[in-house]
Image 1: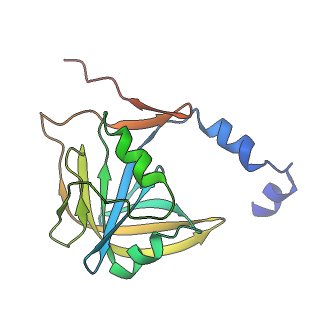
Image 2 (image 1 turned 180 degrees about the vertical axis):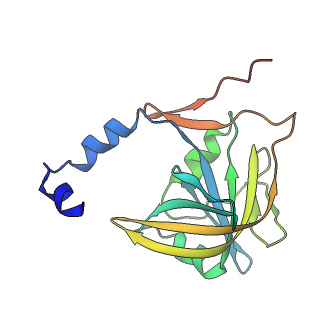
Length: 171
């Protein structure tokens, strides 16, 4: 199958990005602490992988300067951002720097940073990392989570090259 795919016309990254902007993705901030120092990054490609064992995954650019610190921690939290948390998305999407300056956060049982107001958080132990093209697939084993409650907001999504809120559920 790979040989057939390679024989096809090459698709450049800009064209692929434009096409995939039609696919909505939830906005997550993946966070970890190396010692006492918190690190975080936005991962727009977050996925449930397995129920037994409970595994989730996300993709991060291989060039990320935050991920190596987070990987050394051996654990991470996935914070699913809520509508109205656009500024957190922008803050954690930038490269480098202390993204947690001025951000209120707490620690999970594993010690990973949790962002208040998130729709959901998932606490994970690093399970596996694989290089796939210019990104890394990071897989975590879920050890704890905070399920959405009735007072939780709606998730923030990225669609059509902009941040949007999902419409609230109808009764």
